[in-house]
Image (cartoon, rainbow, N blue to C red; front, side):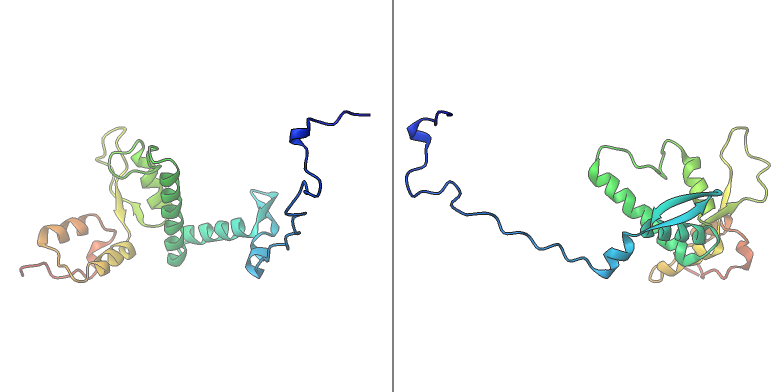
Length: 183
């Protein structure tokens, strides 16, 4: 027979070793219909191969394809997703550099390629005077310039700013430009 421990560490007569009793069984967490749908998996065919993905991932993939196809709402959604992701990355690792930096980042061509993929910019039709190994020249799409001009509703542009915007816009002559400030 095993020997009991020291008397000082034993429970006194009438004292329970588990005064609160057995913990009550927790009811299962209530899941919304949205959670049930979004957590399901689907089989999609990508590059000719079937692949299991969540509904959330499939929706993101569809939005990405729509954005590449020129759907402006999808482009806007993708840009918001990128901004949200960048913010989360920055919050988790504040010392890590951003993936895309428009001001002297590691690879400005990476940002250029994103602008092309998302349909925000197009290739300059006359890029013949580019120096060897230099960056490709891009022009902003008209819809992006219109959106930027609309956001500036309260403030006016001067002649130099309008001329610069024209110089950097695809088919700038067909766009209706605001009157310069001071005219």
